[in-house]
Image (cartoon, rainbow, N blue to C red; front, side):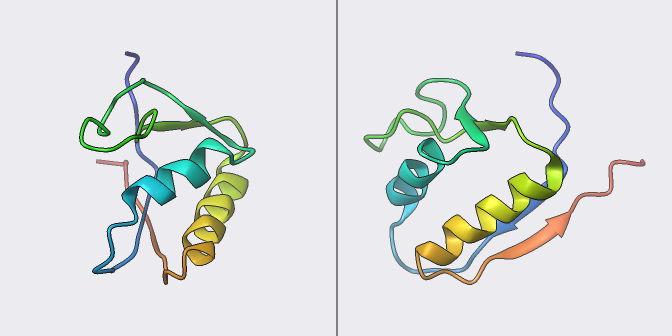
Length: 84
C-alpha cells in the first residue's frame, strides 16, 4: 500500500450503530472508491471501511459531509496540519 497522508477527519457523535450504513453510502458515492477489501469491516457485512477519493479535496469532503447528513448525523470536519 502506498504512503497515505490524511488531510481531513470527518466524524459525528452518535449512539447508533451506523457503520454499515455509512459504508454502503460511501460505496455508492461518486467520488469515493473502496480501497482494500475487508479493511476495518471484518465485523460487518461491508466491502471495506477504507476509501480513496478520486475527486478534488473540496468535493470529496462535501460528499462525505452530505452522506453523514443523509444519515441524520451532525458531521464535524477538521483539517489535519501535515506541516510538521
